Length: 458
Ligand SMILES: *Cc1c(COP(=O)(O)O)cnc(C)c1O
Image (cartoon, rainbow, N blue to C red):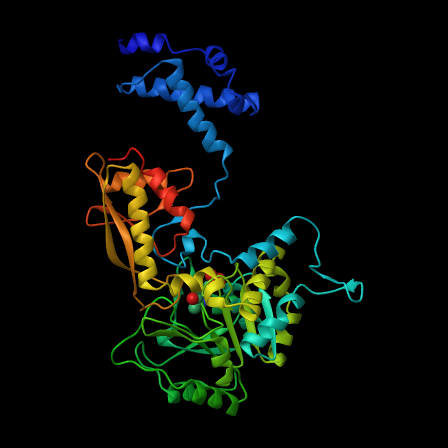
């Protein structure tokens, strides 16, 4: 058929609707929506023909296009993905997957009313913070704690409450930028505090801090270098000495721990400081995220001395950065895992970081088996390395396993795109012209899902 003729015989919307009349699944949607998708499919076909591309004008072909459009617009945009990237705390993929207990707590609260700010003992108004104060105090050994929306908000609140209009001393080696426009100098400015930089990029001495302390100093701020390491000729003063110096001058030491961890964690010889360790050194206030190594939902945790936390509780910013009930439920559920369970087994992030290579190899072999059962693609089990991600353990290399897939009929780039555009996207990486599925963050059911997506690919 000539292009002109094809354009002439493009089916009418009525004809297409008639072809769909027995398709319950499609016809359950509002008539206007179905019609709009059909119109769009016809328009796309017409455009393709006018652009000189070959296309079928059969009603079936156009209806199929419309079905794809309909699926796209009836599906939530924020949805589950399969993380085959191997990055455990992937900020773009929602950071920490929740534990069973955390999911149950969220489920219970999201379905109806809750004790969010209600004290059932007294029948009076309560506070949302009360639900997590006890476990967090136990785990951080802090006098008091406060929880906000995220760690960025926690840092902003701490600085606003303790340092507004005054100076805050920070080492030049710790003027951190986290992905997505969180920069320590900018946050300081936003809080109304003035940054006083001390030391050099690689070295800051205790004396540098001491010389910078003056009558207008509000605090010393330490920031965990979450996403980089300064190695070689580098040093920072001992934490205990720094705390002692600050207290001699009657000012607090605040630390933004970034990821923070509630249990001692060593991966590939790298450790992340626990909140309790830092507070024990004499630091007055620490802040950290709820959805990084802690393994819960988005939250910012502030732990430290009561006298400072009390100022934050009274600060007007607290209301603006308050945590919502679903995140709070996720946090409480995760904290219950720490206190009543085995966190390394129960909390997915910690389990994934500690996965034994033998377990990962077994999982990779299983994935290989499932893939090769249905697909003619070339697959092999490979050794690889993964990252913790999410501003945690920046220098740590995690040894693991994966499956590398290459095809005759489709390039690695096109296969990666195809997988990413599935209704449940599969996020893999490309290495040496192969698509790599790192199995570290995969659950059992994901293996079959990946294999299914590869059916027919060769
Ligand atoms: C991740 C991180 C933050 C931001 O934490 P969010 O919970 O994402 O707001 C702040 N500071 C440091 C050092 C971090 O690593």
